[in-house]
Image (cartoon, rainbow, N blue to C red; front, side, top):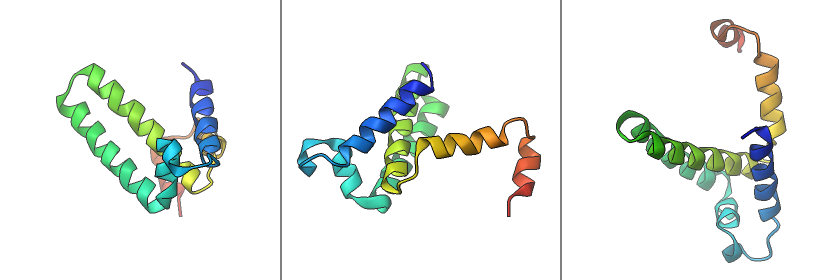
Length: 106
């Protein structure tokens, strides 16, 4: 797996935004709920990921993280923030101490 997988998924999510009917796609239904609805669903998935990380099998954790990544991409799309923009932030931070980077935020 590579970034290509996430980029393809982000492109699919972006395309679902223009699906003809909201019932035609789960992704479209999520996007129709707006950023608040997408954020709520992302939060639910984050909690499920934490539970899997602390008390479930490795396979269950992988499944929950996959769901979390999907819902993160839907949340980004709901706010018209591209995956590329987020990756650019990570790239800019690369090579910087996490403590140093965090203390530089305003």
